[in-house]
Image (cartoon, rainbow, N blue to C red; front, side):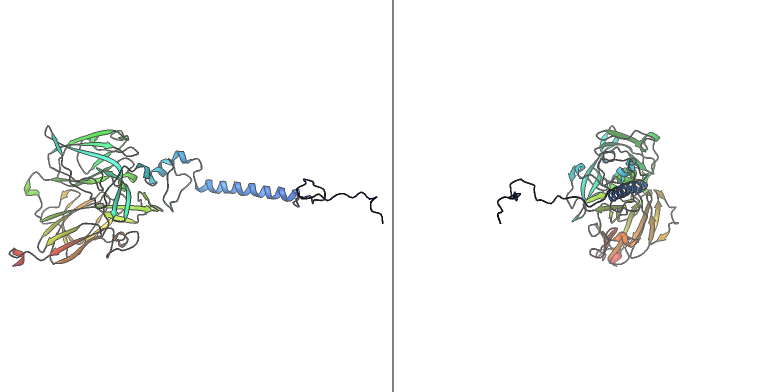
Length: 403
């Protein structure tokens, strides 16, 4: 058969660019199916937005909260304002100005300078990195680069001047807790004074009219700043030595809670997602807390200060009872002091107690909420958190106690 007379379509070769003989790809989706899927997608998107709007404030953007990082597990309600989020947010690592040595101690005595008979104390607030344990660091709000802030010790009747400079990323003030001062010197922001803005300085000046155990703390963004370390002991000795305590040693105990997650430090608060996982006495967690060395027969004055901003701590001492000799700076009438072994120290409260060392050994001073004697829910060397060892030795030979 002669095939030469038939015209045959050539098969396109690979790379020839021809389309003849190739299968045309067409969608098998029908128009009704496409419309249905589109409607379902839109409905799912709308439902997601409505659900989010019910539980989250969608009107707030990252610029409104300065890129705040919130604690894991924090319940974020739809009506939570941006200012609340910023107060609960993690400390920004970019604000850290100083890293304290791991063995640095807080509550260090601050000596004043004297100007025309006035005792002048310089206090500078800044963000630092602070070690509560050798391997655990917090980003803290500190006074004079320590947590707690420096111990201020004066005498009843002294004229004192506090020069406060703010290097924090937000405004602040200081309040002199429990003291009788002129109203304009009391410290509450927006009530008795304008807040001290970042970079600014404010001077407080007053005459001490009381004696006893007091403290100072932030009174602007209080929930945040006090929870991050803006507080310190203020001890006022009596003008009359007869009103002083007859003791061998003194221990100041300032209590604080911390929240640390994934390298970020948040202000601990009594609310879901902000509960603390570390606890400190004078800025350190056991076993990094100090050990107090005593001898049998010694009398130890313990000044418990509720510098914690949101939690109560039942503070207990092993080895025998103690006598409560002052509450909130007010002396208990002589002979009427209560014998206890535990006092509930709430935020703002102070208890002065005297504990007698009756037997040799290692006696614990600690919070009796067991979780508060752990470090991130674990025990180290027998405990953690709010614990101090009172190590009592035998009396020295020749002393009345050794007879």
